[in-house]
Structure formats: structure tokens, C-alpha cells
Amino acid sequence: MPLFTPANPDENVLAQFSLKGKVAAVTGGAKGIGLEIVRGLAEAGADVAIIFATSTDADDIADEISKATGQKIKAYQSDVRRRAIIAATVDQIVADFGHIDVMVANSGVCANIPNLEYTEETWAANNSVNFDGVMWTAQAAGKHFKQQGKGNLIITASISATLVNIPQTQAAYNASKAAAVHLAKSLAVEWVDFARVNCVSPGFVETDMLFKQPKERFEKWLSLIPGRRMAKPSEMKGIYTFLASDACCYMTGADIIVDGGYTLL
Image (cartoon, rainbow, N blue to C red; front, side, top):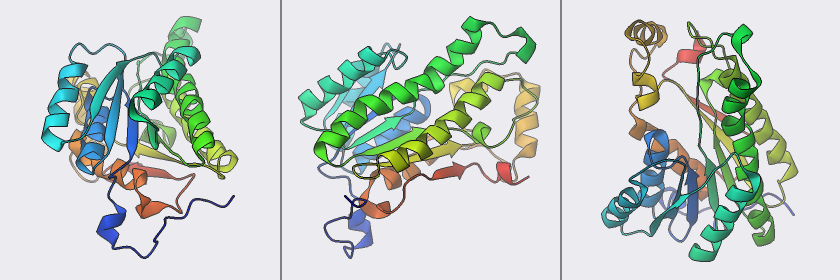
């Protein structure tokens, strides 16, 4: 089967961006970039499942976005590190929504640890979410995509998949994000009969993870960005909406870097 072609490739371009009738799920969707992805997909017309690990207000967030957009939004607690658990969550989402068109594997964690100080536990703590979690989320959604004959996987990677950020030491994070990008490329080829697979690699985005860093480190990063500022989380939602839509049906295996020019230096 060839790569999916929209019913009317000549349709008005704005109509191609519509997600009306689509169902999406977003891991890590209760905060940060993930929350804005949920909001953007819903604003474009999709019903969205928020998958979260530890949020205490995910249901309230789902209600707020639902009221603002008129879309069905529902929150699900899960654990992307556990194959059986995330698979059961995706199965429940399909049962509740009827199908799934888009999965955004967005969950991620980061720790600054000198390489010589890693233990099995601290190394696994990053990789179990950033790489294993992407794999198990992809597999859970991919089974439904294959059964349906159509699907769309979007993975949140990082500019750390392309370069080594300084001055912090985060080999596990960098390596796990690079692995996630190559996993996406592998799946884009393997799943070409029934799904598109792409990555978004954000640069520095003003999330809680960033603001917890020392002031001098924050200022160092800012000095290295040609755009001379960091992004608001809401500036990320457009690219995910584009990838989730039929406006880019011939795009698969791509890693889209959104970084204010940081990786150009």
C-alpha cells in the first residue's frame, strides 16, 4: 500500500490543516509543551486524550480545554515506561473515542549528571521515559494504526539529538533523544504502508524544567541563541498541528528543528 494520500489533495490549503473528526492522544499532555500540543490539536478540531503520569489537575485541564474548544478532551493516567500499562491506556482511549488518528509521544525527563557518576538506576531513569517510553507508546498506537490502515505518530525529540548542549552534563538525555529520532526514522520506513512518523526537536522553551536551572546556565543558553530569546510553549503547538494534519501527507521520517537558530552555530 502506498503512503496515505488525502481524498482531495487539491483542497483549499486552510482546509487541509483542519483536524475535524480526528482523535489524538498526547503523552505528557498535562503540562509544558504537551499541554500546548493538546490545546493546539483541539483548537484545530481534534478530540484529544491527555495521557499523564503524576498531574493532580489533569481532569480540570481537560475540562477547561473542552469548554474553550468544544472538543471532547479526556485525561488518562498511565506510565509510558511500562509496555503493558501504556498499551492498556491506548486501548481504553480507542474504546472511549472509537479510534485513534494521531499519537504524540511527548513525555520526557532530564537530569544533569556527569558521565562517570551514572549508575544503572540514574541512566535508566532518563532512557526509560525518553527512549523506551517512546517505543512502547509507538507500539501501542501502531497496532491500532495498522488495524485501521492509517495513523500518524509524532515524537517530541530535542535539539539535544543533534548537538551536545553546554555547559550542563546530560549524556543520557542527549543519547536518548538521538535514539528517539532514529527510532522515528526506522518506523517511518517500517510503517510506511499504514502510518506517517515524524519528530519535532524543540530548542529552549520556557517550561518549568528550564526555569529550575541555575541563573548563570540560563543566561549562557540565551547568549547562544541567534534569535536572542527562548520560545513560549504555545509557539510549539502550530508545528504539531501541521504534522497531525493532512497538509503534509508526503512528509514522513522528518525531524523538524524549532530552535531560534541555535543549532546553526
